[in-house]
Length: 267
Image (cartoon, rainbow, N blue to C red; front, side, top):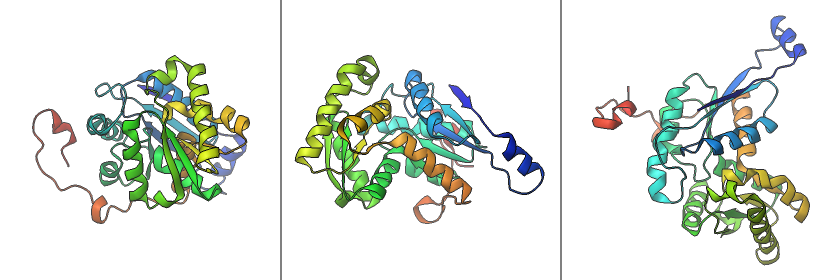
């Protein structure tokens, strides 16, 4: 699925033409590793609200793969969708993986030199910039340990007071918005009272549209990983920073991939 939005001001165009500033155009590809297109549209709408006027947003949904990513098993197949999105739009200046598990992130950084950020790590880092600690509120209990493992890997586990499961399935986030918002709101209240959380990170891209209202209701920063990833990737692109591609992120060696995985064969 392709969704695009692109804005630029007349003054910026004129400055580029006169050679007074370098081109400010950038293209960011947001990859939804699951195959639910309506979720991709929601993610793209969130990204459009935070993206700079000079940023083009392209959103990709794989045709194959799990309709939602909930746990380790789904994540294995969802990672193929992440790589497929990079293959589809190799000219993007940067990429965002719009699954809170950061599905396929390490493989993606080995595959492309362009900066690529997962919405999970983006949300964690944003929280660390504005609070001493935070609580993550995610979907199902099976996602809790995946998130804890990622926090450990990113070196941020000590900043996270708790990872709470709301017991809402990913696809149900769209089906019952009012009831789900109340459920998540109750978890926010518990995070403040029981965890002494100073900020909340919403642990699913499908929760992004709850962030603003919940933040107002509870007077606490509510962080949406999609928005956080957009401004982080924009900053990396403007700074000219790319993935290292050394050590574990070194590009894969050329070898044969057989059968249905041949499209992912390293070149």
